[in-house]
Image (spheres, rainbow, N blue to C red):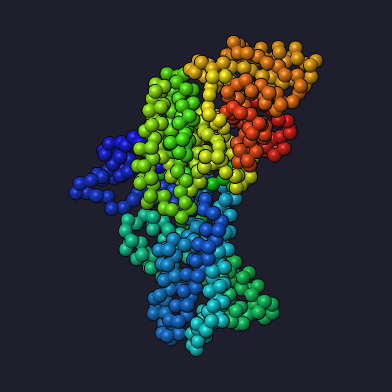
Length: 612
């Protein structure tokens, strides 16, 4: 993320190059390593993008890692045959497959015992998300390893003494007991997860590759076990017809249950307990303090963490200058996500009208740029942000014309719709005002994980504008007294003062017999919400949607509260509020306040479509 307001060099240097040892950022003394807190931050930031990758990308990256470790098995068997089983010479090229994985950025299960677990310990990803990530990567690793073993068995790659060496290596683990396998694998898991930690701590490629080579060389030298290589060995024996599915001391099920399973458990426990948790508590006193501010609620709640599938709250280890300023600002801030600075002027203008009612009003314009999935965000974000800043100059002028403070940011992301909520959670605005229409990136958004609606809560008030040539001169506000219509009343009241809007209130009752009761309710509600001077209409047909459509013909903007299902859940399922957006010719502003609905209410609701 980059901002249109750049801090001076000294302040930026202080943020980026802060060191517990007090080493200066520039000059003759230059810091040559990261502190443990900074290493942890880098791991969290990398894991955030990693665990939110698509299932297909994760799986095929895991397949590539499994194929890479087939090379390790190939070279181990070949050198064992060529060197007459020399204990040192036979393992010299063993780390090559792991080096391929590190350089290629492939997903290896044992490497994933550190970054995703660290993200989960910080409650930035849920436990189900961690297990999903592990399952996909492990399935990919095993698929790649099995395919590689198939090629080695039937492709004629091995011949002569190499075949005997491959069989000898592959059957070695069958003679080791469950618990010795487990503890040998735990030490191997420690080594692999330690390589990940050191990789994030190192500052140059030569050091990183040297550590990778020496660390993975320790696995065969120490007679340790790695789960993907163990699975590849068992697969090779099966395809080479050295073991069958059933029968005999050696068979496929025995290989998987008595050999691969304890290695899998050992690698997992070794990586998680001996590295991730130890390093987590090593940095627990000061980790992430640069990115944390009082009152910030980026973390998942305990129910979300245990049961939900939420992940990737777009963790930013060191907040940029604009976000830090926003956290420090005690004013009334409206965040305005936009997708096109040239066409979203009316959204910014509406936000400015609302913010101008307060002396401390602030409009934060966020240009959300959706990047292709394979685009490197770290490499190209700066260039895109520079262009974005120029494009937002006109929007800044629009907001400043209403005498409100303006801040701008550019976010380059792979997930535009999710990023709106991620940034709202990070910066905690008083309200978010965003557009909804065919020209918006998020108009085609869908909820990929329906359970998110059951676990996540809105971070602030949300206002969604479905724009038909925005005109705020005559506002229709339907209400039945709910909290979301109260938010709509606040907006209508502000626009009546700042834009001279005429406000009409609408309340629908079930029958003419209830008209007097409805009129009394509406008059009292209007007084309570500062709209006593507004026109008041009571419709006694009982048809909420038809009443709104009829009354909208004399108005230019309709403000609707959320249904009990929740407005945003209807947006992502492409069923806009009350199904009336296509039936009215004026603009519609949808309003929803954060609620604490129970899981039962989120699942079933009451079925009542309430225009509040």
